[in-house]
Image (cartoon, rainbow, N blue to C red; front, side, top):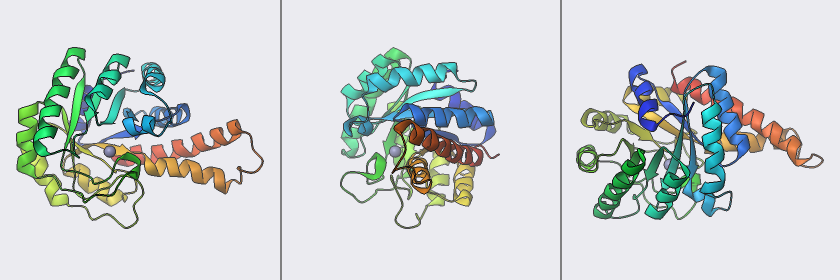
Length: 279
Ligand SMILES: [Zn+2]
């Protein structure tokens, strides 16, 4: 069933766990993620990132309708979220399609511009009854790890509190040592910072760059208040590797490869959801 971000994050808060939030830029990843959540009887968030449209994978109008349909017919709560909308016009397109939740990402802008645009996003989303996630601090690279590498700027707890109170966002993405895309070295996570931000915030905290982190770190982050974990790169990689390992690239039809990849991504998503839900 389709639920809002607020509703799904309430489940996370009540159970002191985190909801897995997966980018699903095609039908197979949607089936893999929702299938994994249904197999475990757990709620899940599926997301479309603006960058996936910029990469040419699909437009938000094309994939959004399918995401809403898949969420609606699922046997577990599913939230349909717009991930990393970097311009306000794009957010409006998502809301027009029916996304119940959007992320405005102004992390590459000045603090004032990020604040001002987030306020506009909140006002816009309210007209649709949708929730808003925003970001304070910066992960230093865009979703998928693409674009120019910049220094990440860790989130300041007091700045996060003021930002949430002034903008009225429903969830806040924080930077504390994770990165988008594949990790080239083990991430150094600032657990104390996460705990300090959590103490100051009245809304749930979101972890980006959430795949590729070890189980013990996930558990510590959840204990310290992380309630939504964005997860994609390592699931996508698991799918690609599965096709390669099975030697499917020489003499296979596309649908055979797709079925094999979907299975591998489902297993990867299942493992992640189990850890996030504390199962
Ligand atoms: Zn992200």
